[in-house]
Image (tube, rainbow, N blue to C red; front, side, top):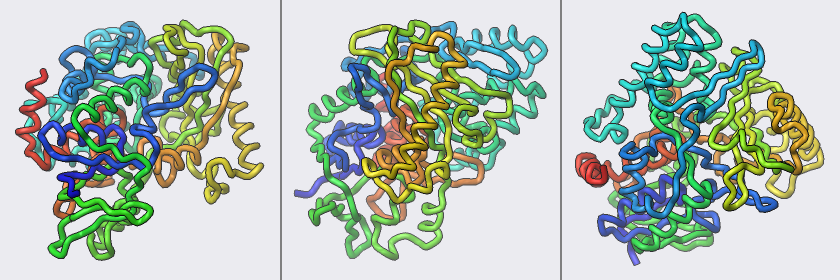
Length: 495
């Protein structure tokens, strides 16, 4: 059997690609090395509490907003139940030194007003910053379906200015700049590295609206599974792709699987980490310079994460997240501070059917070098030194959380942790990057099209991290195949 397309990787970008192609009548095989689709989005459960790993909350899901349109096009809107986060404070920002708290409200006008009340001398800078964010979002195709595709548009995200440069030009207030940079924890690149355009593309949707999904990422994964089955996509789990087959004419003709099997196809979309692409292609297929570029991409920050159950519910954590920074400098170099004295992101974990959290997830930016001494070990087979490191790091992280948040102090019943090695092994990222390859000034990430006819790329490294970025990358790959004007007309029909 020959498929029209094979999609390598059944994460969000791969599923988006597979659904889009199947909607147009193509025979599609979706290949995933794990035993289930969307393994990172699904999360896991302990003691009856569901812990999300790859999805926590999202922007742009309000009625008629980009993600709402995307979900309608993908045919999953009626398969999920979304809920709105606290409009008066979807994110709580806390700084320990100086002591300061700020609740992010939804809506640009309300955000501008609330920021202006907190920083009355910075009203002009705040208005300028938010105007630039809105303008940048309006210039991005697929976020704005009326915007033409500009091949040079991506240069804004490579040649700068950085977020830090933009904020430095607007204000000298260190606290305000740290506050406006705090969402860098959502994409894993420090504000002195990320382009302002990339930052705006991500935070702009959160400024518009913020939603969660009942049942978290597991519900989203089930919705995707139902749609894939409805469209007749052949989902082949436990199918690790180990190579690409190239015809005598140089075009892609199939993929090779672990164990020796092959699957013939006329085209493929690969959603794996860019560093892994050269390993699949025969020697000489890519130019040495391209192979070198893919192999030297910098990674987004990794993390130490904790997953905790609490004795009593935490209603104050419902429909809001918490960002904690020790001081205004700590947000600039993610991963440079030791666990317990580093920036921290905290989000809720729920029992099935409950509306008040019975647990939480804490994420602390951490460099892979913290665990590199044990990088040759594998999951379930780590040495005693690693176990002690993890135990001590978990204790420091719990102490930081309980020190900062009285409603959690003494309430922790059960806690587990994961390290950059855990993320490396489960996310298939070489250095445990939370969001794969960085989007940073000076790093030219790959385009959807490749020099192999029939091979296209999608995934977080192509457009942006997170649910929105992964979905857009799938549309971008399919638009490269089918035509961007056609793709956008299809999406507009769902507005």
